[in-house]
Length: 376
Figure (cartoon, rainbow, N blue to C red):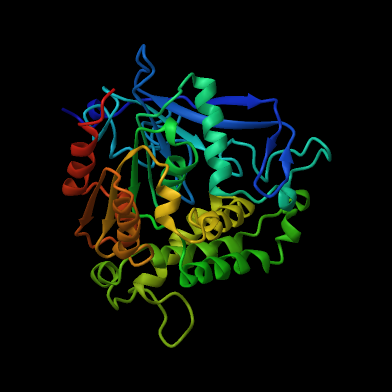
């Protein structure tokens, strides 16, 4: 079969507007808001085969397939979602959504604030993972889905899957938590703060209201992405891919881009800064910082997970130092303490945190094997 035959093919984004105000954990509210989403596969008559894909920091609703007018724009998890793939659209009705605060069509900082007539900018409310879960639940209501067969995500997406099992336990039968953590370490919060400072101190940031000035804090966003990208890769992978190789055309004894790894980071930073919104980057990293489902339970993760009814698959990757396997094992330990149904696999991979995006055969077989036993 060709690659196209294994794909969901051309897809169309959909939009839903909610006229009921959305109240955030912070106490702020949106009078009206919208979510952009995509679906793949068919919802069965019992509406029991729906799977929610939660995106990570820079992700969005375009999970699989491509757009007819832009065939090169392939979904960010197309290698795992599709007919006959681990998240099999011949069995499941798969939903991808761009979260509130995003910059791919859902209401976010670049959307118009109806009270001012200007983009929300820095006035957009700070969002949390529980906020996203509640918004996603309202999308499920709109689609007529009372219960997800599974909620699946990697990194920040995995944290959303975990939060779903705690906040709305009756509405999720399985949670697949990949390359995630029960909360950020101080080191991870520090990385996020440095990235945010690069944006906040960019002269073009204008207190978050750069839209009104016709500029974007490209330099700050570029630096933020460069820093983040370093943490997504493993040392071994960077050594294998770049080593200490220099560009052939590079000037010596200068501060220009000389090493191949520098060139790679500059390329990644430039590419990201062209399409992502700086205010959204601030919101997403802060949501990561705040994520701590055990906090309302005195720091006891097992107590937080006690009410969960879902079965769990927890997956980590050996070279992921951003969310190390030990962090996944904390989740597994808490689940075992409360006698939950949990499977855990640590995948040997050289790709670091980004391993959850890679089409690794063993990793894919683990996800496929688990989902094969999910009843629809």
